[in-house]
Image 1 (cartoon, helix red, strand yellow):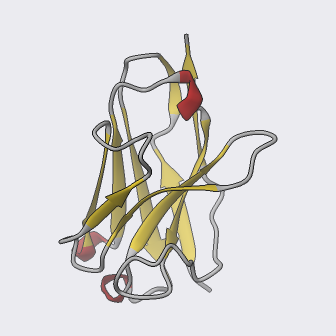
Image 2: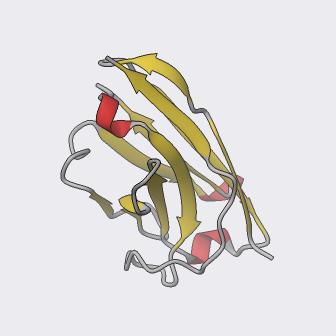
Length: 122
């Protein structure tokens, strides 16, 4: 079974920064694009960002573009999300997930970890 372990969340004030990490196992990591999703209470899971298998292409939800940066380290089977200028609307549980393809499609393999909580106060 594919497993993801997310970390790096925390409690911050608006305007501050966090960097999330996700380490995977049971996956040929370098064969897959990787995405970050988030889910706030009472809302559907929302796609945030994706990076293709080799990290050469990146894509972002418009509301985070310019503030968040996705990156990956295939040797470590890890993907990261640097989040700057955080806003209260960014408050959510953040999850990483493998795409079904090597290029970003936003369609995942269907495996989810526990996520990491990000709380941004005003």
